[in-house]
Image (cartoon, rainbow, N blue to C red; front, side, top):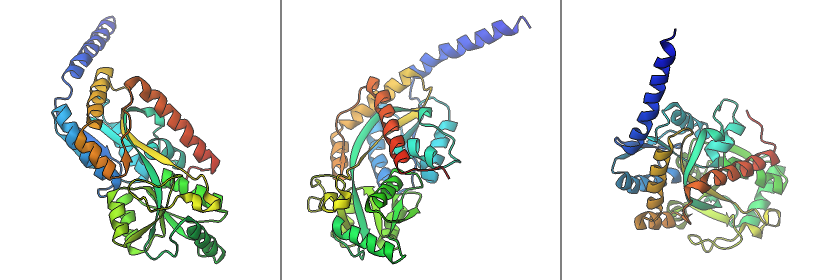
Length: 328
């Protein structure tokens, strides 16, 4: 028994000594970038721009893995099942890390299981409809929502999963209007756009980018309102949601960034933060993000990320409470 203590101590010392060496050599193999939605959506398009620039900075391949389902929780759990060594980056937002655990009993992860490395962009939201939806602005949309609710045929809206930010916004909008709407959850933005084009979905509250703008210009969908007080760069002719009295002040943005599993060694976190920060200032990346309707903004210092994430947790948990979101 006396030999066990020294042996355990030696093993602990060996592991502690190996951590700096692992960090110093990081990365010495490909890094995986986990996207919690199927290919084809806005998240996937952003990832496929980030991975090129990030690969150049890390001098290793950056592989994209798409894994949709359960509002992003399946992908989040896979990252948490991997070692905390920086080789699995999670591309996420409050949707997957904060809201999914509040909305689904089966989701076991908590926001504090992840650490924010860098916020890459902020996106303004908009309300998009199918081409045949009988409204062209927020006021007409509200009138149609009320009309159909009274007729027992509620307007439906899509989201990327129960408890997602888009789901909460739909519920909040229905609450402001004072009628029920029908929530239709999907695994990602790509499948939603397919059904929006097909007319199976009435409305989609979402961040938007060049693909959404192109579809609207081709007459395949319609922008009804921007969730902002002023016109937006990519959709300058789309009116503010303020046109509808019931939705005045219904303004929202959502941030996206990169996270690692809690407990990842600090030198590895620092290396990833340096690389992602450099990606933010890559001209090609910034131009592409601008074209997608994303505002890159200022890079966060590493010592700011914990507070920014904590503030997001407080904000989104508050929104969930306000609409009385219950885990199912």
